[in-house]
Image 1 (tube, each protein chain N blue to C red):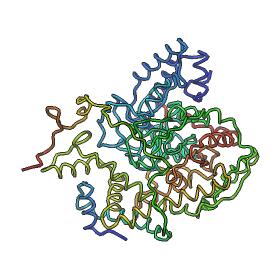
Image 2 (spheres, chains in turn blue, orange):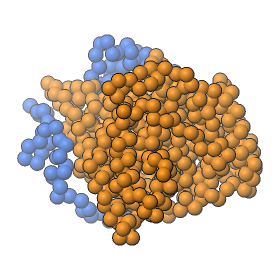
Image 3 (cartoon, each protein chain N blue to C red):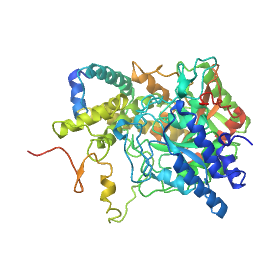
Image 4 (cartoon, each protein chain N blue to C red):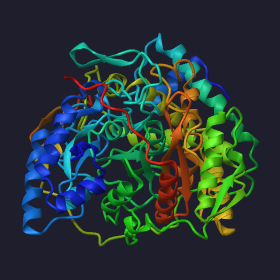
Length: 95
Length: 506
């Protein structure tokens, strides 16, 4: 399978990465090189094989449902590009 | 007395204990060496004040008789590990000013055992790369040079000539260890990022079993593959350092609830009676004759030390790398979705929130990272998920089964080359086709796909005078056998003489 320019733009939008018109043909070439490399996986017979979900046999550890952390607003907002009154600030979302 | 920076980690530990020198003296020697080696670009952030303060505290503990196992040992930290109050960037512009208010579990374990932080080490952006050329801080220079090469120190602490890459993604770690800019370094390995740079720089690197080291506080790339481990100058040093890094952590649900063995005790165990497998599928087309010869020599060394060498088959080997280039980008596209310019990191404004996201990520991520996010987004998107992602995960099951079959036949460890070639020059690979660079990981990536431990040990030099490494792959949670067999190779090959400081600024 290979991707066309339109698909490259669609993937970029899904990935929330702005791309310029000049970048699209390069990305298309690079993505197609990778897709053609992974094509060989189609040779493998995977009938009846379970997809891997955990690389080591382990059961999920669970803990008591309780508060273990908190009261650290300053730390949470420490790296925020924009914050006000203990909130993250973003451009207006709802008109 | 040997220069303090040229001691092994074990020698430095013993010297501190015997009070032959102080932790402050040891840290000071390293701080000075780092300041003279800026041309290598191995450190992206030096923390000399912190190093000296920690060393002073170590000296007090040594005097009081309360020293930890790594007391006073100066280490470099890959910039993927979050360090409290010390900027942690993952080699990316999007995190260039990120100041974590917490400490990663691996580094916390090291500090708890007395280690001293020298600074943060350069790396490929988000650990995506095999040459350290994708870093937002620029490439790292390998301390190694080809025989007769034109590389040398230039004026004003620069480098002239076409230098070699140290490998990646832990290129800063490997370069710093090989150039004697720390006694050991933390590193991480998703597809070969510890073992390939170790092989390129004549150092030792181990990727432990998935779950051995906590991933908490380490910037995530592909969570089902990422593991932390050390890069050091000897097998023993790796054993010492890994013991401190590893252990159960309730903050990482995939962290293994197993006691951490005394890895150092395993180093001198030998390989008598062990069965070592040689996988025929690793004899790939176009393998260089030096690598092939070195591989045979490695098998001989192990046989001479009492191991039984058997040929084994891992039939799905050739599919590991293409399957990896679906699984790893898929996980990366999910993990890196968090860099949206809202809670931390770079923000580039836009007309609305969607454009703000898109502009932030376009400017914040480098080319390789964008490429992988987009491949991951594609293989997870509606209509392609089964054809790509589910198929790759099924093939991953088959890769793991190959190893299980071999181990079920009584094989204790598997010997392979670490890389298909020695180190290459900057700009030599991957410019036109990204897959050319990906092929570096052909021998290492199977190990991540199966969650197994793997160690790279220097084993010789190629005709250009560059180091080559061998890899040993172990059973899950049996790093001890890797340290035992790795030491046999180190003894037989002899310690590789590391380059002298041609880069040093006078």
